[in-house]
Image (cartoon, rainbow, N blue to C red; front, side, top):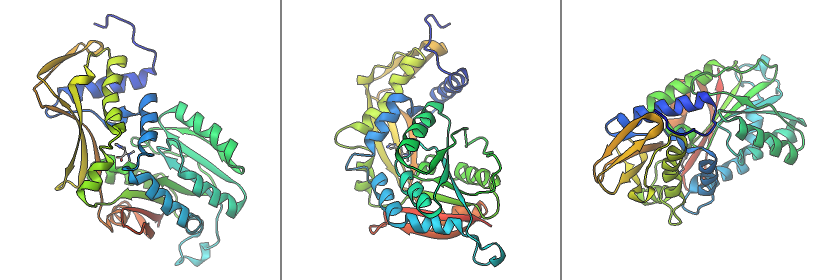
Length: 334
Ligand code: AVJ
C-alpha cells in the first residue's frame, strides 16, 4: 500500500516506470533500463556530460556534421543514381528520433535551409515537454525551420503522417548503442517499415577505441557521469517512495570487450535492504552487488553499414573523424 501521495506524473509513464523497476530489481543480476535516466535533472546532467572533456562523442560527431552537413543534405535530397527517372532533387523534411536538446541537428537544419529555403523539422520523442522546449528554441533561433513535434515511442511504433516531401530520418548521438544487437536490428527494421522508397536514414555510432579513452568518457573526473547514474536512485526515491541511501551506492563503468560495450552499474558498498514504498517491494543487496543501468555498444568500422543493409537500407556514404572515433552513415530506402 502506498501510504503517501505520489507526485503527479502521466499515468502511462508512471505505470511503465513501476513495472520496469519491479521487474529489473527482482531480476538477477539486478538491472534498470536506461530510459529511466532522463527525468528533468537527468536530462540536464546528460547535457552537462556532453560538455565534459572526456566525453568525446558529442563534439566528435558535431565535427563530422559540421564538415559534411551540406553533402549529407545534398545526398539525402537526391534519389538513387541508378534510378535516373527519379533523380530530381526532392524537398527534404528532417525527422529526428530521440531529439533531446537537438544541438547537433542545427547544422543539418541550417544546411537544408541553405539548400531549399525552408525545412520542416519533426522531432520525435516520448517527452512532450522536451519537444515543446525544442520547438520554441529552434523556431526562434533558425529562420526557415518549421517544427512539427511528434510525441511517440519510436521503439514500439513508428508511424508518420504521409508527406510529398522526402524524409531524412536522423538517429544520431550513438543512441542506438543502448540497444542489444537483436533489439537494434528490430528497431531499424521498424523504422524502415515506416519510410518510403527514396527516404534517407542517418545513423551515428560510436566506434571501438582504446579502453582508457572509452572508460574515461563514462567516468569523468568531475563526477558528472556518476551523478547522472546515481540520479536514477534519486528518481526512484521521489517517484516510487524508495529509500535508497545515495552514499551507499557507487558509480561503476566497465568495458565488456567480448560484448563490445561499456556497462554502467550502481554498486552497493554494503549489504543492505532497500524499501520501495510505491511498489510495496523490499530489495536485498549484498556488499558489492550491482544494478546494471546501461549498455553503450561500440561498433567496428563497417558495422553501421551492415546494420543498415540488414534492415533494408542501401548504404550511401559513411563519414568518420580523423581519429576514427565516431562514424556517421547515410542509408537510403531502396
Ligand atoms: C545518449 C545513450 C548515447 O551511451 O554515451 C552518456 C548516454 N551514458 N554517459 C551514451 C550516456 C553515460 C549516451 N547515449
